[in-house]
Image (cartoon, rainbow, N blue to C red; front, side, top):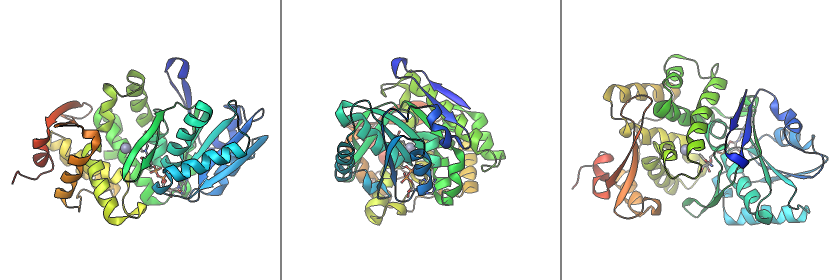
Length: 343
Ligand SMILES: NC(=O)c1ccc[n+]([C@@H]2O[C@H](COP(=O)([O-])OP(=O)(O)OC[C@H]3O[C@@H](n4cnc5c(N)ncnc54)[C@H](O)[C@@H]3O)[C@@H](O)[C@H]2O)c1
Ligand SMILES: [Zn+2]
């Protein structure tokens, strides 16, 4: 399957096909330039190798797995390695891995010599469904997530569902939360797949439909000034939960992004019966339906989160299946939103 992101001169194709990683050379020039293949230590090495085997002059650079690699230090190390490999403006960076590799790799490509070509080969459900398209690249500064980055569109995105075979189940399910999100805001048929289908059998359709939702939204609003807000559904509270759990646990695998998004979506669904159906879907998937964190701490984090800016906060609500609305609320309404009454 092929999807085209229509973004004028920055348009690109998304290829979704079993085994397509071995055919990257059909979609990008890997012969007449240097190719820097970025991956992480948790991604089975065979995937980066499959890309390297197609390059005339390539190298693989492996960063440590985990969110901790989205930092200035590793960013600097990657740029240094690119320089030492002799990369110039015509060369190419290929990211092979999950959202961590894609976000860091994309930002390295965006900033090295003011921008070189970037190809993304996502290998987790989360990155195949969500983070590999849309052009957002970033690293973290301490606990401030995705605070330094750039909009940088890839030249092509290669999604090979076969790579998911090696993904641990918890990671696999984690990424599906973003697909449930896409269904809730814009695609009832996608939501129906979760209610009545089999996620393993339907995975390619789930990825495809989720990408279609994101594609339509990003094409309307590449730089997040309007419609793209919809994609933040579940993320306002979700980020708060993620921050609090992350701080407590300190280890990245204590908390997964998708799990927090799942929790963040529930209170934002206005229709009671849809909320119940969503809870059942999350349970069926094995995603959490209870936060298990101190909501006061989440509230505290949200108050300090710079992105909320000032005395109001914008949240995305789903009034019914397949539609959404942005609401700007005074910060004083946050406790009620979290199920905490004002004390
Ligand atoms: N740019 C965006 O629009 C966007 C959107 C959502 C999330 N993100 C970012 O994505 C990141 C999370 O991405 P993620 O959930 O993919 O996490 P991740 O990249 O850390 O991958 C999860 C784990 O799975 C391992 N792995 C990856 N592919 C594998 C495979 N095929 N088989 C076995 N193991 C594999 C990785 O080594 C890692 O340990 C966060 O940093 C988040 O901020 C970005
Ligand atoms: Zn997300």
